[in-house]
Every structure is written in C-alpha cells, then in structure tokens.
Length: 77
Image 1 (cartoon, one colour):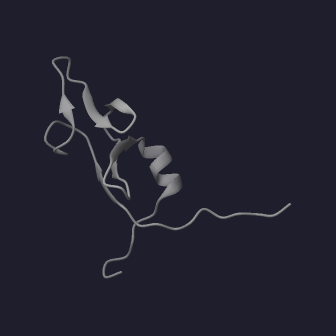
Image 2: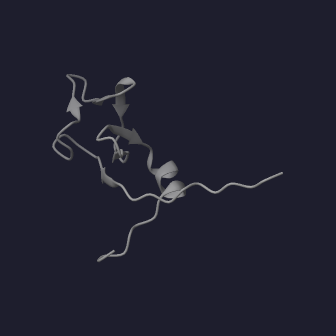
C-alpha cells in the first residue's frame, strides 16, 4: 500500500482567550465566543486557535489538535 504525507503549509493563527483577541470572534450575551465560518457559525472556546485558511476563511481549532498538526515557523522563514 502506498503511503502519503500531509503537505506542509504555512498559515496564520491567533490563540483566542477573551473578547478582543481576534476581530472576527463575537462574544454573545452568555460570554460564549462565536465565529462565522464557511460551514456556519462555530463556537470558540478560550485557548482555541483561530486559523486563517488559504482561501481567506477563518475557523477555530482546539489547542490540543493545533499542537499536533502545527509547529511554529522560525522567524525569517
């Protein structure tokens, strides 16, 4: 069976903790963060990362999954 490797891409991400950490996250009257994505309105929890996709879309990703999938790009690269 042939093996495949996920392509390496660079993306921008901001870790969200509270209102004001990312301009696209709106906090509702219950204090819950929400962001509009291509798939609809999604919940954002403190510590989630807001990922900017290659097509300009934004979506949340929990910290644990983010750390498995991504690593920081060294400065200057």
